[in-house]
Image 1 (cartoon, helix red, strand yellow):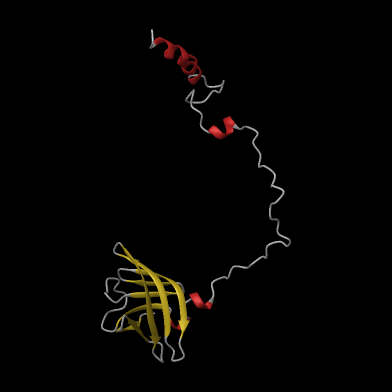
Image 2: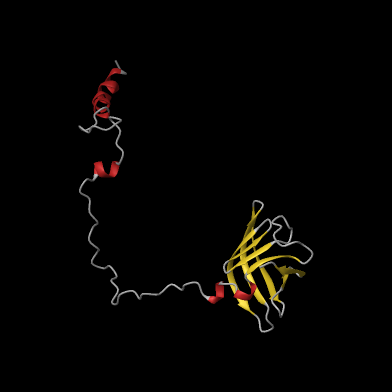
Length: 166
């Protein structure tokens, strides 16, 4: 008898649980958006009396477009390869393609985040690299030769010179 009383109290709850409110959904009895069912005409409450309201509209701050500070200069752009390698050999270890916003090496690619020119013609390029399942940030110093046919890149103190392919 002790167990029958709680079951009798729960019977109406079980009966209501199977009710779908008259909706004809693909899965009857399932509510897909409980907030719409619980608060069908809900609206944002008005701001409190002590709310802070700006006296002036917020300024329209223009977002900078691609600026020279994040683009590699034109003399460095193009395809490069090792001095002793053949142009067009995509498997060459020193293969490099330089675009205004990317450094594409044989097994890694860097997205340029900053470019800073130096007085002696060197360009410091900082890029976020990915390759072979890893990610890193690196700053390279790049300097073209006077005739533009060679490009020297200094990376962590090591220097490599490449020749222009196009």
